[in-house]
Image (cartoon, rainbow, N blue to C red; front, side, top):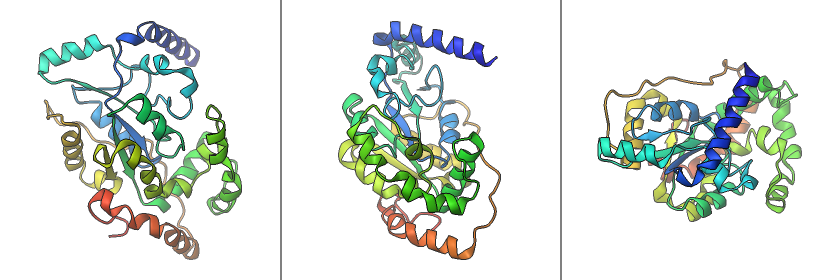
Amino acid sequence: MRSLKRSLHAVSLAVGRLTSGQRMLPSFVIAGAQRCGTTSLYRALAQHPLILKPVLHKGVHYFDMHYDKGLSWYRAHFPLTTTAARLQRRYGIRPQAFESSPYYLFHPLAADRIAWEVPGVKMLVLVRDPVERAQSAHAHELARGFETEPSFERAVALEPKRLAGTTEHLRASPHSSSHSHRHHAYLARGCYAQQLARLEPLIGRDRVLVIDSHRFFADPESTYDRVLAFLGLPHFGCPPVFARHNARPRRAELPASLRDSLYEHFEQWDAQLTPWLGAPPSWRG
């Protein structure tokens, strides 16, 4: 079954590349952060008749892992412009294509590449209690086999050594990758304001919507309305079905000393999120 799926994927991609000039580019991307509800938001938005998901899979990872493959390869993942034209005739509004690759927010070159290749694109960024996110990410990477250290506390202690020089390496070798930068950045990925500051001059604050994932799951309809307003799209038909996806079992309670030190570590970055969110983050409110 897996080999058949890979074969079908290869055929679809080959066809997509042959017709890449007739395919859409995304109007917006869900850029991260990892383990913050990106899959849940992706699936809710994909139910809208004027929001078109990639034809192959949710995350294309062009601007982080596959930039060497070129823009025609990227276009091959999106619907045909004839599909968009047909929907526009039906609804009177231009459809929008999108994708969700949560590594875009953290990768040091992704924002520059996005701004260059897809000028005018909008970004959705979800943020979550960074301590919870770090624990969830560790459980996720452990389950997928990308992490070999079963202790979260030990993995956090190892992080500075694992990530040392990785950002510089990725910048110096633009088509390279780093296993630790992608899979072991438990605390670094939670410094959301640092990553948003990199986005702002390239994408523009008015084209970045930052969503508190705790508030999203507490009141998904309200968040969905905000996203549609940000994208300039109306409601159509039934509201989407909201569900949590890719959740991991709750991890053991952290020792109080470790928990307190982690929240202190994130304090300055959390404070800088308020202008982006329009309110203090839910885990600090």
